[in-house]
Image (cartoon, rainbow over all chains, first blue to last red; front, side, top):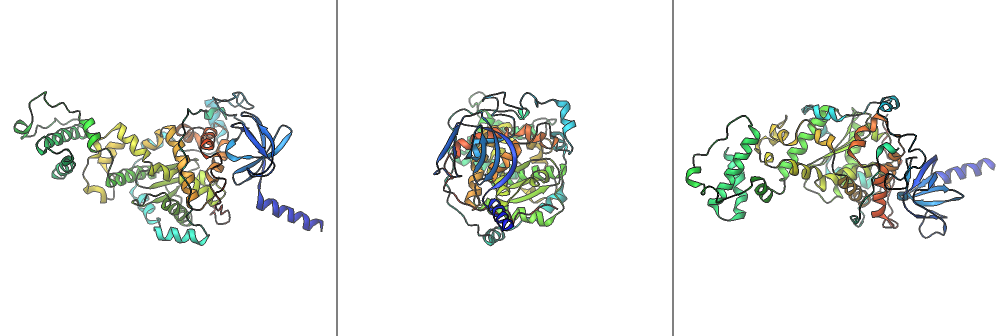
Length: 176
Length: 302
């Protein structure tokens, strides 16, 4: 019985929300914390831009977070994961910024795997064989549509998003 | 040569007067020659004495004129430019040797692209064999995702979000706009070479060295726009719109100083900024949008 209950709970958790290893995050705008992952749910608390939070789970467009004494659901786009803070235009020295400030010598130390450099792109010569290969792997529009249909995907009517009016903030990658 | 003159002359009918139009064509032709054969002396056309207007009367800036006449690249030119950039990119890093993976990405990307509204292109998608975390788009419908980025994805909706962002770069012609700013005349090359298998020198002159156009990156507002437009493409294709935001969250949590993201650092705004800017645009607009995540169907790299 106990075991059944446990597995049921586990299944529920799996289907409803993806638990993530508790990760640090920062609130990107003054925002509400809801009791459920829905804007129609009751508001549990409010959080301020720049607040440090712990991310507990993810479900669709929502994150379950703990902010101070409060736990609740916040819009996915109102929080950033990572300990780098909101960026240069925001609160500034949130946890992590000062200690992880970029240092060129760290680049090699941290990196286990090699990237792709701008110099490699600049020096690159034309590879006709790979291009032929790319062409040979492409699919027709009909094939792509059929593949979409196999999983029940169908075209949805979604309005374009508005372009911003105001100035934008800027963070640096180095603040991570 | 004849082909060039034809190309130059045809759009000039827009301006009316055919006599002066031919002079404009000559101006552009000279500039093209200068550009392509920097060492060769500029040729004087034998007809210039008879046809050219008196010196000083006609002050036409060829570049200005070029913008007026050739404000947009033709589809043919767009395809050639994209093909050259992609061939160079593939010279720097080849495709992953996994045909199932490549087919899967083409099927997903092809469907998202069909929902972009741009139907005049042949879309091609490829996964690049590098641990770098990045994605690229080139004009004409060439889209690439690195293996390093692909490995971090968790669902088909996330893949659709990433591809949607890159597809948006193509539909919004972000790279073509950059090329237009830096060089215009070079695009007026021969049409004939488009079917050739190898490198297209005419286009290479336009795009600079190798695939450096991809290393230089775009204006950050172009990236923000691609985020806004790309999430909508994925949602219109029936996916939940939270794929790209989920990937940006993942990238935001990566430590700085990771060599896999060094080029991404240079060419894109910080993911925290992208989340914030995208969040401003989205607000509650996706609250009623329900789409599929398709975690099970997502193809995982061996």
